[in-house]
Image (tube, rainbow, N blue to C red; front, side, top):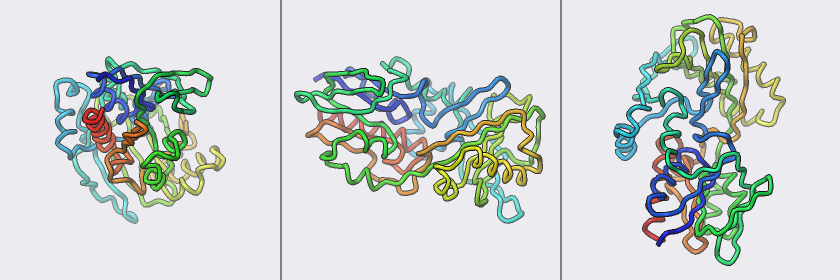
Length: 325
């Protein structure tokens, strides 16, 4: 039977679920942002571009490997053959953490390809959902109302999903137990092309945990240096509600020591606060579904984190729904 399905969230999980369900059902995807992809995102300026969310992704699950190598997606996926290191005290140690992929030509290109042909309502911040005569009703923060959905999928970070789902949802407590952590992303544009001796660097620094030369990724502009810096988890948690200017100053000072240049003098500087960037206490459920309420939830945090986990979670929730509705 054809169902009217609402998906809240146009990240990788939501798009994957929508792509698989739209073949048999009427699917509408809502997202508060002006573009798709969630943390698979790219920020632009006049001279620079920054993948300020997900930096790269790996592929271990055969289902994810299959989609990456398919004819549909092979033109938007490229390996990132980077000079990857982690810093231990004063030594640079090669980071051999596995084969890295990036989306091409921008990090959100994979999400855009996933979204092709889907019915997506952007700039739609769903602020509440409720049942009316067995049908779901969605309301947005600006007062728009969408009715007559048979089923709702919340493809959101767990805290955002909890804020929308009824407390009587049979998996409510399990979702609440998941812990997601914040992160600050500092985007630095340098007019000069620098060679730091690495393209990506992991740190045990108290402030910064990751630096990457975004311009080292395939087909990115290499005329200047675009540097992405991510803050350390514990420091981010401590300062997540702090003054953003102070946060930026601290990250710049730490990065200056690492890079050997004065980051504060950079031509372009922007900081972004991700409130739900990574998963410190993930679920292993894969996804969640309450057949009595006809509400489901998916996301990377349901499946160990990471881009691959997000894709598999969206795929799983679609398969479960297809077997039940």
